[in-house]
Length: 182
Length: 182
DNA sequence: GAATACATGTAAAATGTTACATGATTTT
DNA sequence: AAAATCATGTAACATTTTACATGTATTC
Image 1 (tube, rainbow over the protein chains, first blue to last red):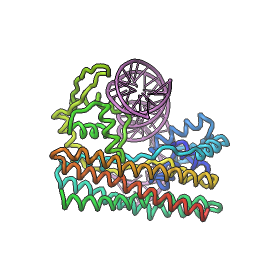
Image 2 (cartoon, each protein chain N blue to C red):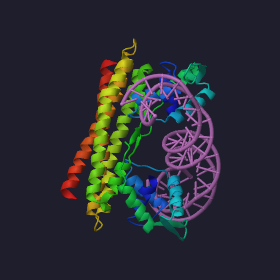
Image 3 (cartoon, helix red, strand yellow):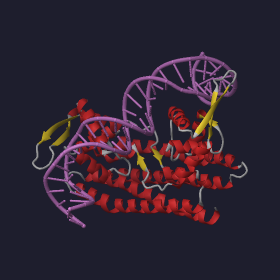
Image 4 (cartoon, chains in turn blue, brown, orange, red):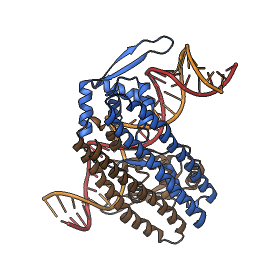
C-alpha cells in the first residue's frame, strides 16, 4: 500500500525520498506511516516496475538528490488502486490496550501511571494535528486547483482528531473505573 | 509484542497454537491480531527462550496437539513487560483513509460507494463486538477469581466499540460532505 | 457433496525496523 | 563547542503475510 501512497504524492509533483518522508509525516501520519529506509526501497521497486522515473540533481555542499516523478503507467496504477474496493477492515495494533487487557496481576498504581502517560501523549498528538497538520494542509490547499483535494485532506485530518478525542475519552473513563472499582 | 500476548493467555491456562488463535480472535481482536503461522513460530521462539514449555498430546483420528504452558521465567518476562512504560503512540494504518486522501481525481460515485461499503463493514464489526466478543468475555469471567480481569477485559472491549462508533460517525459526516459539496 | 472445524506446520515473499554511514549547515 | 537539522542512502535484522501441505470428523 505504501507504493500507492508514494504514487499519490508524486502525482502532485516530483519529490525525493526525503521529501516524501516529510510530507507523509505532516499529512497522512494519522493513518499511514513509513520509515525513511522503507520509502527508499519502495521507490526503487516502483522504478523497476516503470511506475516512476528518477534523475539525480547535483548540489553543492549537500548530497545529490534523486528526484522521482510519476509516469503514465504510475498514474494508471494509482487510479486502478483507488477504484479497487476495500474489502478488509483496517487493523489497529496497540500495546497499551494489550497491557490493560492483562493488567489484573499488575500493581494498580503502575497501571494508572501507564494510562496517564498515554493520555498526555494522546493529548499532545491531538494538538499536533490541530496546529501543525492543519497548517500544512492549509498551505498546500492555497495552490490553485486544489480546493477539492483540500476538502478531502481536511476530512482525513478530522478522522485523526476524532480518533484522538475518542482515545482520550476512553482513557479518562478507564482511569476513573480503575481508581474507583479496582 | 505478540510474545507477550501469548504469554498473557498462557498465564491463565495451557493451550495449543490453534486455541491461542481462537481466543485472540475472540478477545483482543480490536487491538491485536496475528496469523496462525505467526503464532506457531512465536511459540517456538518462546520455547527456545525458556518462557514456555510444551508437550505433545496424542489423539485418535485428529492430529496430535502440542500444548504449551508458561514457565516461571515466562511469568517474570510477562510481569516485566507489563511494568515497562509505553513510550510510543500506537499507529493506525488504514488503506480506506489513504484512498480518501487521494480521491480528488476519483469519480464521486465510486468514492461514495467505497465509503458506504466501509460503513457497512464497520457496523458489522461493532455488532460482533457487542454480541460475540461480549459473550465470550462474560463466559470467561464466570470462572472464580477473575472478576478484576473481567473488568479490564470489558474496558478494552469498550475501546473497540467506541472506535467503531467514532469511525461510523466520521463516515456519515464524510459521506454527507461529499454528497453536498464535492 | 461441499463446507466448516479441528489441528498442525513449513517456505517464500513482503513489509517494517534498527543500525550504520557520510558530511554540511544551523541552532543552542 | 555541541547538538540538531538537512539530506542522502545501504545493510542487516525482525516481523508479518501469503501460499502451500496434510488429513479426519462433523455439519449443512
